[in-house]
Image (cartoon, rainbow, N blue to C red; front, side, top):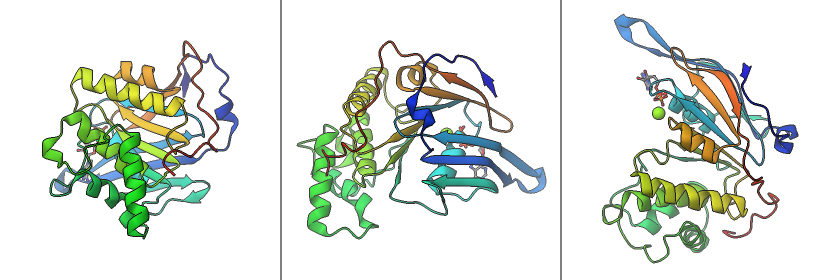
Length: 258
Ligand code: ADP
Ligand code: MG
C-alpha cells in the first residue's frame, strides 16, 4: 500500500480497531460470463475516534465492502470483525446509512426511526423516547408525523441518519450519504454531521464513509482509502492534514440521545 501523505500522529491509530476487515474477497456468479471478482483481499481497519473515507469509482466494490462490514452479506473470503468478534450478520453496534435513504414511504418519520429499534426488542415507550431524541438531535424536530414524500431529500437523509443513530451504534457506516442531494443540501448536512461529531453529541465512536467525491472525503475524513477497480482493492491510503484538530470528545460522552 502506498503512503501518500503522513502528516499527523493519530492517537486513534494506536488504539485497537473497532472494525477490522482482513483479506475480504467477494465474487459474483455471472452465469455463462463466468464469475466477477468484485473485491480482492481488502484490508480495512477502523479505529475509535476516526472518520475513514473509502473513495473509488462507481462499480469498484465500495458498497459490497460496506455491506460485508455491516454483516448484510457474508463475503466469499476473508474475515470481518467488530470489537474482535467475527461479524456473521447485522448487529446493533454497527449502523448503516444508505445512499437512497431506504425509508418506508408508508411510515411517518417517527415510525421509520422507531423501526431501527424494533429488532432489538426495546419496549415501546423507550423506543419512542429514543426515537424522539434522535430526531431532535438530527434537526428534524417538528417533523415526527410527516411522511417521507413530504420531505426534501436532505430531510429524508436526516431520517436515515436518525434511524441509524437511534440504536446507539458504536460504528456508523455511510454509503454515499450525500450523493443523492443537491450541492447546498449536501454541504449543510455534512456540516451538521461534522459539528455533531466534533462536539461528541452522536453516540458513535468511528465512521466509515463511502464516497466518490474527493472534496467531500478531504473535508470529512481523517484517513482516505483509495479504492481501485477491477477488482476492488485498496491501492493507497491518504492521511488528511486538517487545519485544526477536530478530535472528538471522549467516547464516554455518549449522553445526548441516551
Ligand atoms: P460501488 O459501490 O463501488 O459502485 P458495488 O459494490 O455496488 O460498487 O458493485 C461492484 C460490482 O459488483 C458491480 O459490477 C456490480 O454490478 C456487482 N454487483 C454488486 N452486487 C451484486 C450482486 N448482488 N450480484 C451480482 N453482481 C453484483
Ligand atoms: Mg455503491
